Amino acid sequence: MNTKPVCGVYLNKAVNLYKCQQMNTTGIRQKLHHFIDTIEDKKAAAIYTLFEESIKHVEEDYTDEFKAELDRRYMEYKKDGKVITRQAMDKRIDKMLTKSK
Image (tube, rainbow, N blue to C red; front, side, top):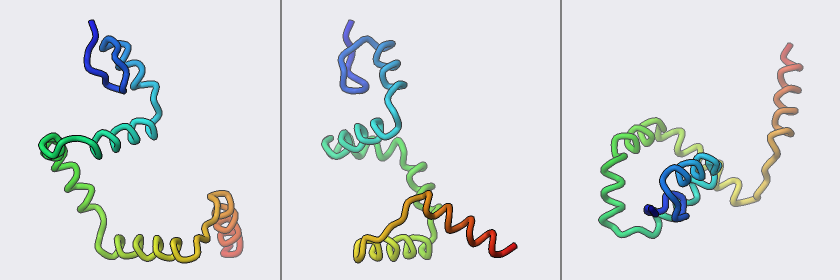
C-alpha cells in the first residue's frame, strides 16, 4: 500500500522511514526549506503554530548585540569576501595560546 511520500518517494511507511533516516541533515534541511518555500499560506501558518514556542525560544537566545555583531561580520564578508579555513583559524588560535604561556 502506497502512502504519501515522506522524503519525496512513494514507498511504504517502513521503507520511507528508513530512507529518511539515511538522509543527512543537510538533505533534510534542503527538503524542508523547499517544502516551506512552496506551500500554501494556510499550511505555513499551521506549521508555524506547531513550532511557535520553539521558534520563539531560538529567537530569544540571541541578544541584540549578538545579532548586530553577526550583521557586522556578514557585511564585512560581503565587502571584501576574505575568510579563512577552520584549519587556518585553529593554527592562529594555537599560536596565540602558545604565546600566552
